[in-house]
Length: 201
Image 1 (cartoon, rainbow, N blue to C red):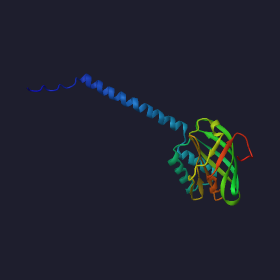
Image 2 (cartoon, rainbow, N blue to C red):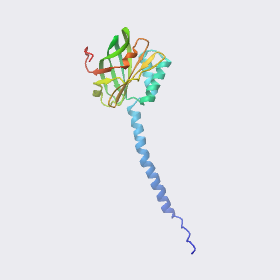
Image 3 (tube, helix red, strand yellow):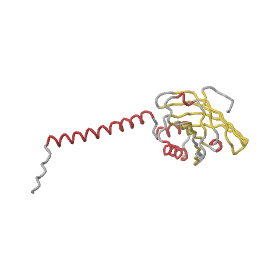
Image 4 (cartoon, helix red, strand yellow):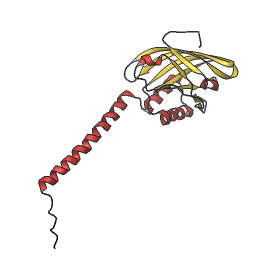
């Protein structure tokens, strides 16, 4: 028996298939585009963060750029930052006290104080500027809690140091510039509060 030849699809049906394929593609692309737009709206890009950090520290170093690059590689785009000052000292066990201003990309701002213990590797005291990258914080009120240091997260290059502190999904990445700050600050925790407190625990 001679097989019947397959009839080509009518032009109208082929056009309908093309239309359906285009609609499906659009269906998948719209959420991706919306998510990308939301991320760009609610987060800072690397150039913006580096510009603010350079202005805050008042100097430009190769180490600062590399540390910021490391943070973006590890954590992605931050939703905000804290510009602050910190006083710390150590006699084996260290104490740190700081204050700063939290700025979120969504427009929220807040005054923040922090204090906490750490293991130190030196004897003495120092004051330094601290620039903290903030991740996954949509509500400024959630900053006011204890953030344990992440063991082994210390990153140090060309006089600039950074470590990570994390509570649930919120990650903080304090960046300190200069030889005065202690590597021991990467161990322990920081308690962020609305008001100044001299009780470190």
